[in-house]
Length: 362
Ligand SMILES: Nc1ncnc2c1ncn2[C@@H]1O[C@H](COP(=O)(O)OP(=O)(O)OP(=O)(O)O)[C@@H](O)[C@H]1O
Ligand SMILES: [Mg+2]
Image (tube, rainbow, N blue to C red):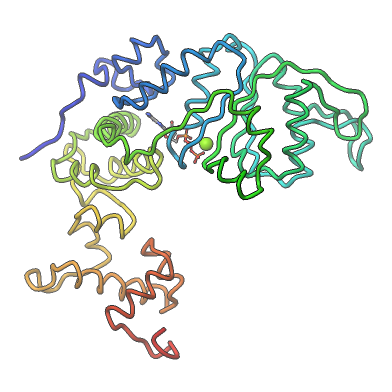
């Protein structure tokens, strides 16, 4: 049988397969600790790691930009880990998760009695991060008035707790991350340019997985070993066909998507067997785009193997099956198929699918 086991020993040190850290040769070369498992062989990532090594020890603010799941938080942790602040606090705040008033008290704390229920002084994340590093995640989602407050701390290194008038001084290194293009947000008037210049003393752009395809087999193998050991499964590797599907997938969710997919595949595969396309679960459109054929056998039944294996016919079946499952509500069927309602509507017309519950076929 064609099997995929290659490209490993040059990338992951195999005598410690259960370790969560990819002790890749150049991780060693860079002197990184294996608790920071950045597995990669891409020159783009190598450049990022050289940059990280250069700037980590300074106090420079670092802005990390990249699509979802590309490893921004991992890189932020790495900066902290090799910085001279590594023994000081590393505090993370997700700026998109909280409404403005809550975010303000979360970051700056509050004085006792500043609002009903404030029985004692609350220390915000800036104070908690004093002498250490504050990681502001999803900074692109912060509104303009909070941005002004952050700018003030960066300029003056001081702030007031909510309800307080005594300036508090802190010494905090700021790392920010966003999956938005901040420059674009500035053009749209959503982000302050003066704050941007403060935050991006150093900018790190993390490339999406589809722009570093050489990482796909390596990371897939890394996670296969990790999950096999965690789940105590005897998984033997990927068939070549499976690896080709992985390589051709577009990975809109990047490393996180790959990691989840591998975890599920290791869970699904029979003990002692190789991972086959049937063990993979992509969203529909990406699966077909990657050239897959038989994975959705639980969703579509192919009655006549020979005549129905055409992509068009499979697509029509998948659409009808999804519509049936979702009571012919197109919006829900689109979700099931992993496509936009608009493109499903287009496909429905293309395949000339109609249903009595629809007024007309729109
Ligand atoms: N090069 C890599 N090697 C191994 N694991 C990685 C790598 N890059 C990312 N990961 C893993 O992928 C997952 C997503 O990474 P992370 O949370 O850092 O992404 P992110 O860019 O912050 O995503 P989001 O924008 O959605 O917050 C994590 O489990 C992380 O450990
Ligand atoms: Mg993140």
